[in-house]
Image (tube, rainbow, N blue to C red):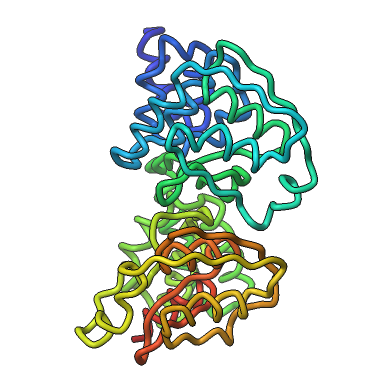
Length: 347
């Protein structure tokens, strides 16, 4: 009986709680932790221990392809590092370049790296331990995006775990249905109280509201639709992802030809303290591409690219600042990720 109750308790356990419980014995639970995937990195950072660190490195690169898998192996390899009085980005370049590992620094956090100088003298260690040391010194974390180790903050690197939703009991379902019937009541205060009672059950009420969408008068139907929208969890997306929208769009033949330089040509490009619209204009001018930069804010950026594709350059110039790129009416359009999604839904 005790075993049955324990199993039932684990079924109700949130992903965050499960990850933290498994982290108590990382060696024995390594496979179970890895099966949970990178989304549990954020709760695991709260309980990190030396024994958990190698597993965190595996999670940082899990499911990101063969290149990331190869880098994970390199981070676990032994090394000796000695550098003195150097900025963190310079240290990372010196340490990682010989191992053919590329690194990117979130440009919005450049000051953390440009205004800090560090000494690293570590013998019989691993590359992963060195990266953790640099992250600790700069108050950052590191993940993986577009073939690079990326230093940023946890909220910009990884989403929050989507927690399991515990189904409603029969009694709770009865209460949802009873209050749904009141959503079309003539009295506004009755409708408001009923809506509040349903909202208290959270996302678990959604499947039961879905079954009631066609019930009652127009007022009731409209309020049920509104409650479904309010109860639907909004996914938290990290800033860094693998592709910009333009790289996933289905383009016509004319646009494919026009924008082929995004991936077919390589450029060398360097700017310092330049506002984003001008940084983008200078970048696309090298390939003579039509581009609308009117929706870009005036944040300043400094960047350096050597033999990179234009697509890669635009990604690292724009994506860290929350912008996305798509093609419309024969030109590159740049806007916030949310506005790009809305624009494409309207088409």
